[in-house]
Amino acid sequence: MPREQFDVIVVGAGSGGGVLAPRLTDDPSRRVLLLEAGPDFPDELELQPGFYSGGHQFQHQYVGDHDWGYSSEPLPPENGSRTIRLPRGRLVGGSSMANAQMFVRAAPFDFDRWQAAGATKWTWDTVRPCYEAVEREVHAKRYARSGWQPLQLAYEEALLGLDYVQRDDMNAADCWNGVVGATPINRVNEVRQGTLVTTIRKARHRENLTIRPDTLVDRVLLEGGRAVGVRTIGPDGQARDAHADRVVLCAGAYGTPAILMRSGIGPAAHLRSLGIDPVADLPVGVRLLDHAVCYWYVENHALADMRGPSTALIARHRDNDWMSVVTTLDETQGLCGLAFATTGDNVGGPFLLRSSDPTAPPIINHRYDVEQLRSAEQAVHEVLSTDAFRGSRFVDAGRSFEEIVAERVGTCYHPVGTAPIGAVVDNDLRVHGIDGLMVADASVFPTQISNNTNLTCYMIGEVAARKLGAAPRLY
Image (tube, rainbow, N blue to C red; front, side, top):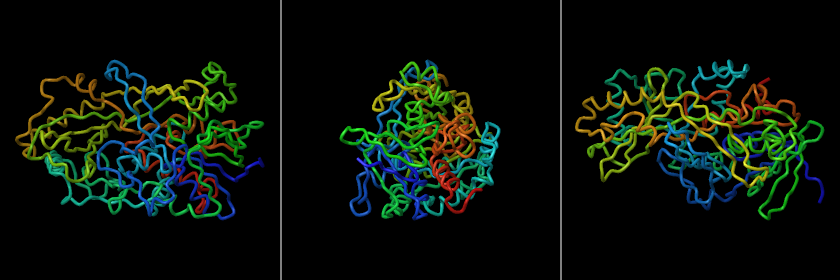
């Protein structure tokens, strides 16, 4: 078989790779291979898949068999000792085709934290144009209050009475600390605007873009300290190599560290224990970050109505301890959920390989520091004391904070940080010590952001494209 050669191989067609690969093919002379472990839907415009529109709930949406099937190791006792499901989209479009569609930016001050953690060139002024470029390609809407659930209207009214400030654009630079307003959602004509139906749709006809679905990447091929391609496993189970001048991993905070480790890039002692020869001893997977989420339950039949999206409204704590959405959980029982998610670093890890077999699920250790959520419980009581929630019954009355979080705390579906800028990649997203290899996904977050992560992953794909010469350049 002749050697297959490209200019760039992008591994993963989700939020980062689904932006990066199409942007690179704006240059017709650049040959790009986009690899995805799950299926593609090239006729999605005419033959819409069942998950095409997605739901409105504050969870990852059901996408049939197109999920990686990940679960965590048991949480520590203070988090309930439970194993939690960790859904990730395994299809062209990745988790952008399965998430809750909250299309919100990180806070400007999040990038001050990134710089202090080693991402010294990632200033707000640098990333803001890349957010804006993505938002011109992938549109978001704000649901009018006329379409909100009664619970959401009451929650906004209650917070305004507690001196929160109403905002119309929760992506504005001043929409932090003590604000409430309509959530930007990447959903148009009630169709989710993941990368499958936006950036990839726009580029898939180009002759210089090859999309190869149902193709699992085993490892990066290395020669003399340089990435020269990848080894893949196709749907027939056979290994196949593809070569390129540059490889960019966009397989997500769980997928990218696994590929790096199988390639010999990661903690040397762990790699040796699996029979993998270390090539670069780097702290891959050492500091897995996430946001914790916990629900408090309220019964109010007058407010419980399932109409409208569960994420139409978002609120932010005065001291940035949490972000919050509310939604009806069961309208027949009048059950309402007040969901609060932390905004800081919830440090888990280590993320480890179970074996060198690329089909084996990894060892994913999450743990959640719930102290930020104590102010959330206080907020629940403050909200219930307002006229907007008159007649509500606090279902969790008499239970301690510790009991509630041990029973309910879990993932907010925001894993990041397993190949961070500074420790594993440099400011240009290049893996330390390995020429021709980059990472452009949630793995590179050096610290967690104060918001949902999806739009920031799109932004990182745009940053990577500009660093690789797509116009306009960053340097």
